[in-house]
Amino acid sequence: MQDYPGLRRRGFLAAASGIGALTLVGCGDSGSGNKSGGADGGGDGKPRRGGRLRAAFAGGGASETLDPHLANLFADVARAKALFDKLADYGDDLSAQPRLASGWEPNAGLDRWKVTLRKADFHDGKPVTAEDVLFSFRRIADPEKAFRAKASLEPIDLKASRAVDERTVEFVLKRPTAEFPNVLAAFGAYIVPDGSSAADFDKTPVGSGPFRFVSFTPGRSAVFRRNDDHWDGAPHLDEVEFVVANEESARVNALLGGQVEYAHELNPTTARAHEGKGQIEIVRLRNSAMQAFAMKTDRAPFDDKRVREAFFLIADRQELVDGALSGAGVVGNDLFGKGYEYYADGLPQREQDLDRARSLLKQAGAEKLKVTLDTSAVAAGFTEAASIFRDQAAKAGVTVDVKMGSKDSYWADILDSGTLCCYRSGAMPIEAHLSQRLLTDSTTNATKWHHKDFDALYQQAQATKDDKERAAVFGRMQRRLYAEGGFLVWGFADWIIGTAKGVKGVDRKAPANTLDWARFDKVWLA
Image (cartoon, rainbow, N blue to C red; front, side, top):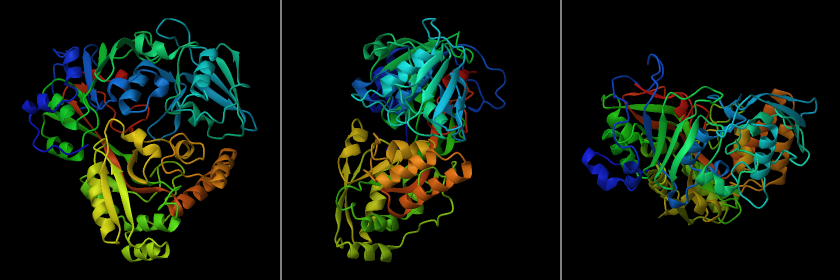
């Protein structure tokens, strides 16, 4: 998002493109009381039951859906995890944690896994069964659809997999898969009732999550009520309302004006302006979001790896972190997942080297290269990063034309179009990043990295039972990406959330996209 200095409460009505959502439902007293106290659960005292929490997110317009298998934006995922459950989800350290699954056990060959379900019910009172799990995964894997988790579920032979009994699923895999629990935790791999159709989800969605459906107006508002019978315990809140406010200024001013109690994704300038001032709480989820430029490796000029290496060397990463993120982050090294399991932290930190960059461009016959950099105000720091990198590239003789894209369609537009774009990612295991974005048939392969030998290395890693040996294979893959990949990863940003003073129980360690992020069933209003 763009920076909005000098925000004022009275500016909210003019700034909020999502104002309809913010006035549609329940903008009176939420029962929070807005008493003193921090957002962290630590030292907050005993949770208080009751009230409605209103949470502002950037949304997807009139095309929004509650179909959890289509969840893509952060707003989609937050709504999905309130209504539905997955078999597993990612903990703060990006390890798979049991959810609807109470446990899993592989055979000796790692190609059959038995998953045991805990006792849980859907909102209509019917139990969650093995057949529901198989239906959900088969729906996601439909070859005619492009559901988010489809690539992650690829290792499963869903025709051969079966329900052993009502609460036991035997998954038969196409190949040995040591990281199979990550598949269960895959983004979008929510469990829905057997027979659910697309039409059901936006009218009367039935899940097994901590909240039950009340109402939904795409692009505006969704209201959910506490599920007293949730297997993991009833939420403290009576209701949660998700409201759409696409402009960061709208979310901030709604929070300052008492129209919402939770504002997702604030920019660093806003955070610095309000941190410690007493009016609202700022929650920083450290180094949650990878910040990058994505080069499409299947087309000129980035089909030449010398050009890609030159761009790696053009970037002054510290200047990008300082300028685009206002210092709220750390530098990257052209690899995803800094600090996560399997991360190749032994590689030298890449520094700017304009002489070497110019030499590589000359070797590639691209001395006076001109390239278009697609960006948008769709995410914090994107437009600033584009401008900074344009100036850095000019020093190497490269002309970068910054092209502003639509916030509503940016993520779809850049997937196949263009040659260079601003890119980011929330947290996920390195294995999941590889499978979703870097295999030949990955559905979100923004760099068009298509290499059969790289695909084979991924399968080798998944078939390797020994942890150290598997880490070595993942290390080989990352060294290849470091040398000639399409992601110029320049930084890792703090994920910033703002809350009203009376909001308690917001986790301060969970990276965006993990289990305890947007965990509104554990939040309460003091």
